[in-house]
Amino acid sequence: MKKTFILAIVAFSLLTGCQVAKKVDEPLTLRLDQIIFENLDEGSDKLSFDFYIDRNDLGLSEPDNVGGLLMSSDLATGLRAKTIVVSYSDFSANCEVDFFPHRCEVDYIDGQKEYSLEIAYPNGEIFKKKIVVQTNEPLDIPKISFPIEKPTQGDLLNISFKDVGATEYEITTNLCHPYEDNGINPCLDEVYYRLVYDNGKLDFSEFGQSDNAVLEGDGEIITINSDFPLFFEESIKYRVNASFRDVNQNGVKIIFGSSDYLEFLTR
Image 1 (cartoon, rainbow, N blue to C red):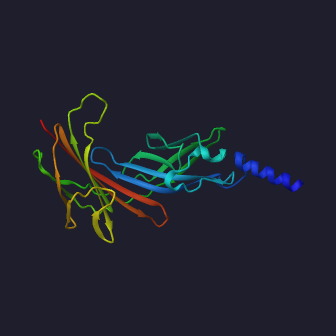
Image 2: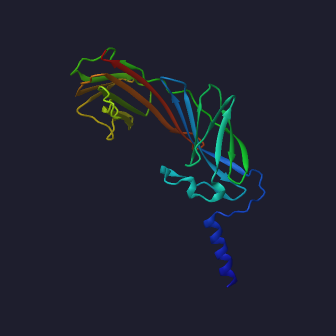
Image 3: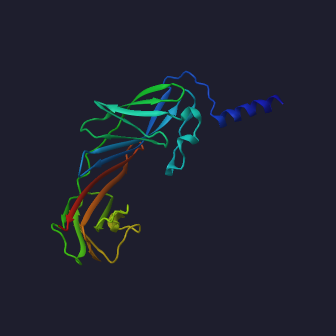
């Protein structure tokens, strides 16, 4: 009877998240999971980093959340941070707390590698940590080299852009019509291509369109010649997003991204 009672108390404690803090050298540690570095065409570069939290003082760790199926509310009470703030220099911003791994996004400054984090919990506990985020050179902009002028109505879709050595490219062309004041995006007409490297060869992905398009590449310029006719009333917009995915020696996933954008108005 005594053993049964003890087991019941342990089970209840795990389910309700009741933990007793213990003295350890580092009560809280961080596990860097992913780095995303975006070289943007229309603004400052963005750096995001995702991390898990280990509460060593409580013997608790956030589990790997592949696919983001779990929320912080699913975790034991001791793991539910109230706020996470990232700062450096004169910059400060809130990080993600409702989902994990937790993401912080900052304006990238060349040479900036160390960021301060303040993690607060509902019971008043506050932990201050430093996290070092190593990045390589940013991915070059996949500069659009064709078209160089507005296509005429009915022209077939053709686009060329710089090959920046990415592992994936997303190419989107939006055909825009007059806005009718009905809350509907007037640029919903879209042609989308996704290119991926497979066995060292760049090809169309099954998750994008192909519509008898022909892909050409010489290692410097990538060209898509399509049989899709272009009809638009207000404007036509082209965007190329490039990304390079890798895993560093510490097992941290790294995504480098860059993009270019081009728009032609009808008037």
